[in-house]
Image (tube, rainbow, N blue to C red; front, side):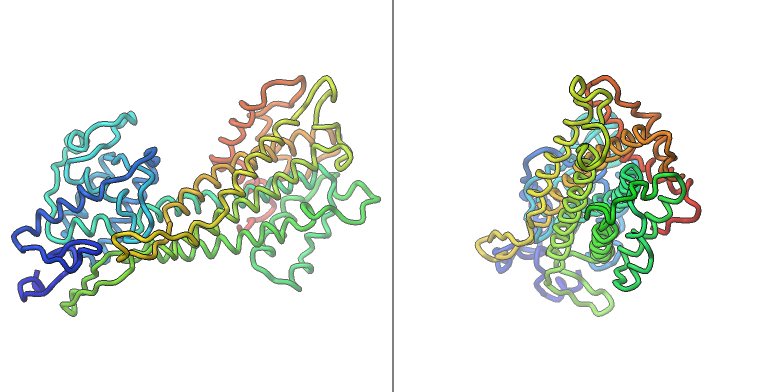
Length: 467
């Protein structure tokens, strides 16, 4: 307000937007300008984002505004907080963001509900008007002040919210894959010497060292350690699992470091610096750091899925496992788990397509004023889909590994592996006579999603796993 009082120009406050930045707007039209930018930018299409992604974006907006560089009132922050606590979840269309100038269209959907427009979900997940959603939460529509319209739609909060949720899921799935690898290694009677700590002291990647240590702890005890004596060494997918999963851990750690910076940053434009009485038109809304990180997350997910599917295949193939074909009780009459491996392979192929980077693409918009964009929203949506697919791939691997252990009886699995066996068998019974596998995969996938597989080995291991 001081800058405007002194006759200064502030982008998006007394100017137009994008290529219209040099077009002045009369000061008595400033409030109408904020209303119109929200309305005009609510142009998204496609399926709505899941509620948790929208709520994550709202929380990130609160954190961004709290940095004090967006020139918004505490009243706006309070409105967002009350909406979160009151269960007001805007309907946000998933398509429409190019990831530079931020997530303009999806953030505008959120801003519409803040002002009593747009659509939201009620407690039963039904679509209602934004005005009714606010009334149900005992809230009034907020009249936007100067700068608040552009502040609400500038930034990477939507792509970052989706990406952060995908990252947290991915970290849990990396732990799950180590558990599944231990189950498969035990069922195949794999040698443990490939996981010897000395191997990882001479090539000390952090992720590989952690992965090997976890596998050593998960494979303690039992009768299956290298019981196939003629085998000099195991296949790459078993022997090199710490190196493969470890590389994924290290890559995911970098993704986390990027997102930790982003969620705690001011991504607005213009930025205000109250202590200096200054403002700067910059580019912190550009999503390239997030886009590249989430592209990498999709690559990591595809790589882990490839390893997992190879484990499943090895268990199914009697020439490789020494087990009944497709882990069937009566191969020939029964097909066993054969088609679940097809499903895993199909999911992996989908994930390979999703691993193609979005951040190398570009589109020029706003009459070439905005001539480089990040495609960060596309990267986020790809990462989310890939992580969801990985969950089912790991579920199939675990189902196959547990089924294989039944055929190794009376040999005993390692202690933590036995704990996983008992957990899974409470949800998915032994696959005897052929039955539809889809329900089993769905139940197993939910067990993975809830983190039960990870928690059971954390309780069963001799010491903390440190992952």
